[in-house]
Image 1 (cartoon, rainbow, N blue to C red):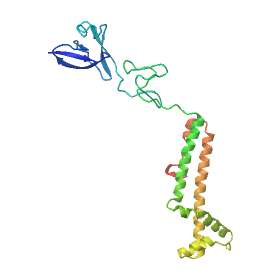
Image 2: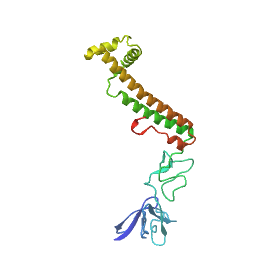
Image 3: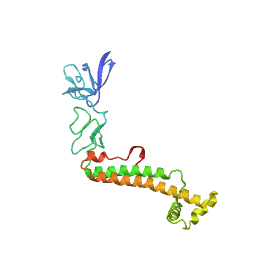
Image 4: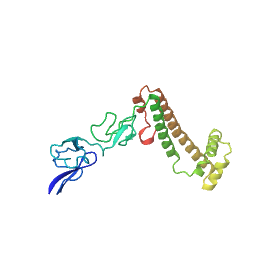
Length: 233
């Protein structure tokens, strides 16, 4: 029995094993130590089929150790992974040897946006923050009840301006709740005023942040404009 070193069709070392005789694509010469991320390749002028008897014998070739990126995740650019053997603008790579300058083992960062792109993206974030904060104002109220708010607001504001103003809807609510009409009007007016104050703050804050984004001179300045933490304006 003797130790033989099995190659693949590319001459790359697969493994070693004990065998009584040398077989196809087997080398009798021990390979060098192979560091991580590399593979040993047998280099010879002999053909494994034409020169079957001498292929892999001592003195018929030599080992070289090359980089092996066949299992690495490779990237051409941000958002563009590379598949081994794929054509990329007339260039290909099989994963063996030094990594070409046009490939990366980590995804490249996204290119910096233009000022206009950054402004548009930041405004989307600001609007999302506004929407979340605005929803908190109406949380807990059924949709059907929210649909009555315009008439409740109209009657409450009319009553605030003129205590003699008719408030038929609010009076009906008072009857259903079992409270005095004047109490219902006062409660509704307080709610309307509180909602208006809160919504004014939210809308004004969104508009101020929008103005700051539009006035920003650099991408960094744009990204510094954020919706207040905690969702509150």
